[in-house]
Image 1 (cartoon, rainbow over the protein chains, first blue to last red):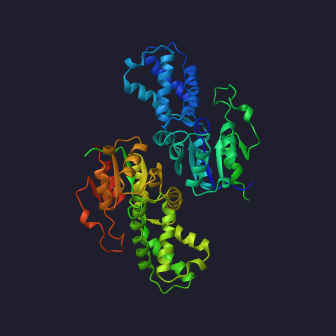
Image 2: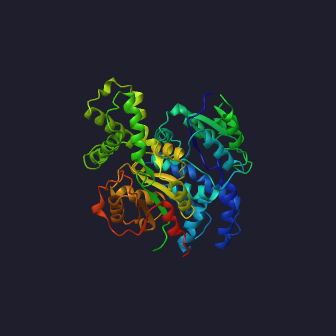
Image 3: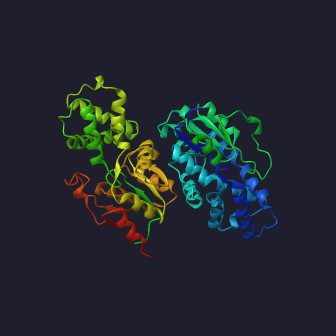
Length: 240
Length: 240
């Protein structure tokens, strides 16, 4: 297996632990609005469960592209209404701040060091559905250093649409078969492989709090497999 | 003057010394093709002189957006033909490599340190006409660390078109009047100001080898003025 000329990273779940961070922040916001009765981990899972349907309206439903910040806010409002919250009575600044909890996700313990080691080998860019402002704030807080923020907002489309993978590789000036998606999700890797990219799977068993992943039936043999970004770096650092 | 919430940087001339690098690389390439008779500094100036007309065809001439790498290559071919070089007889890989001399520009002595200090205050992004692949390679070689690569390729338009300034600020999630363009060019700063941005002028008297700048008649009083990125950082680091 030859070494990739650039790496594109899925971020939510692969580089950062969205569930722990969203549950912790939501516990605080739920208490502030007098709904400490709701379970914060279930709330985080229910928020994330609205992610694919929201993007599907853009991918397949003819909705014009909007950044993920917009969808995260709409998903939050929908979830709060589902629980009977009168969203119109809330401070809009509080709702925006809550929706920006996705800007404040904590990295997995190996992410900062692993990313730095991979970056010493080749350019590392985001290939995430997260928008630029989200990725900038998240990365500055977490200490994640990228060569560029690409993916959905650059492509004006959401994964797993083929053009997101191809436009990210093209922007880096790299042929698809020299460009490697790094992701914890079989569905994401399967779409990248169909577009001609190399694939690196990172096992993140705690992404869903220990529950099994929704895309486990899409498992394939990926070009690289590792249980952390540092372990992936160690595989690639071996002299050729 | 309040502190900007994010900084967008012009790169060619402001952060890197294009003329010295392009002249040095072109001297080598000219020798390789048997045209060591041509003056490399004049060659660099003539290459750069084709920059505005090439972009004008995109801005005003109805040409579809193309990345700057493409224009740099076309400008080089045009310049070589102007000097009577049979470009079709050259190795295409040599021409591409020569056109990518713009990926290998050296930073001004204060750029790496100044950028790092400004980045400690607020996000720093490129707001350049250079494309993503160019900026990635240039920045990795020079040790320039950005929060995102934005500007022309993200906007699919070239400066000084208004949408390049506004789309860069928007991608960062910052209002135009909180977003500061940092540039060595009055023409660039004037367009940014018209779009509502804050402005920081960096004096680079050696950009044109000591010759006066073509846009000196567009000088205004800018929000910040400094003779280096470290000096700009020092102004902004003053406690409020």
